[in-house]
Image (cartoon, rainbow, N blue to C red; front, side, top):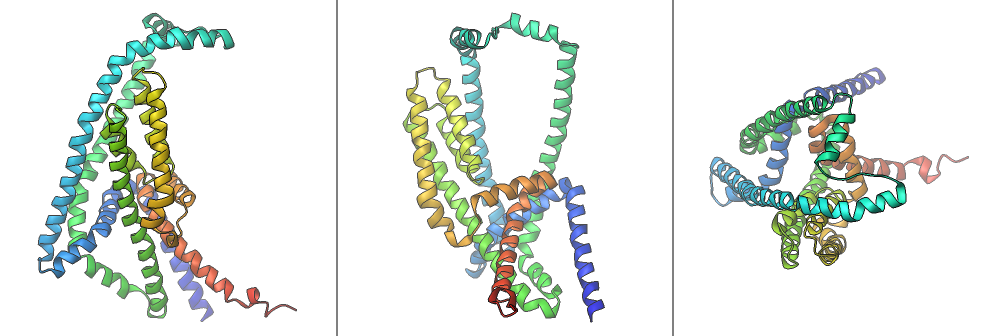
Length: 356
């Protein structure tokens, strides 16, 4: 019996190591499938509801794909023109920004640190001339960046094309797939494994769906508030801030920096900057004290720092795929830690029954 238990443990450890190896080496190939699985997980309850109302499942899945595609297309059609317009405004203000830097920042740097610079064509020419390879090195680096960027664009295009296909098949066969997974669980572990999977599903579903609602509300708030204070490209900055809120604090900081840059480019003093700080301060207050506690729920137990660490750690280990599986893995780890805590509290060691 002991030998058999060790064999089972070795098999499970080997399967886990094989899975990690596959994630590390097949990340770009697995990305669209993991993304499709996450989207299917989020959308499946609505498809089930349509099916209960009498709509054939295949028709419901197609309608869901069209709905998701329409939402994404609307976001692209709204954001891209606004971002292009923002880039145009920044380019138009660049000479004015350079003049302001030369008039205010450059004298301050020279006075306090002895740094002598000037943002003009002559300064750029001197910097390139002082470089060992000059313009050649610059063009080589630019070419390498374009080459890497081109490969990344190919990967993104493949993900965009494969994700809806994989999502369609996953949604159509969602419940048969779950039954196959459940039937594959050893009977001795079936009760505990299904209970833990149900706990993981509760944690993950509440977090994801609640967070999506928080993102939508904050996107509307930031867009309206920035538009009210007269910030250029308010809708694009506000919507991006709302979408980036999915990463706690990091998304807020990114949106705040973007808004501050846009406000600073207006060259109208400190009033736009202060207005942006007030808008984002109110938004952070609403998110932290009202939206997240009531819509996501404190009982989920995924602390923001744990989410940040999971996203960064899995992203570092497995790239884009790691970022996709970070939250499911965190939910599974959270449920596992809860199970270990229950076993520890019920143990003879904790209760002191083994004490001398």
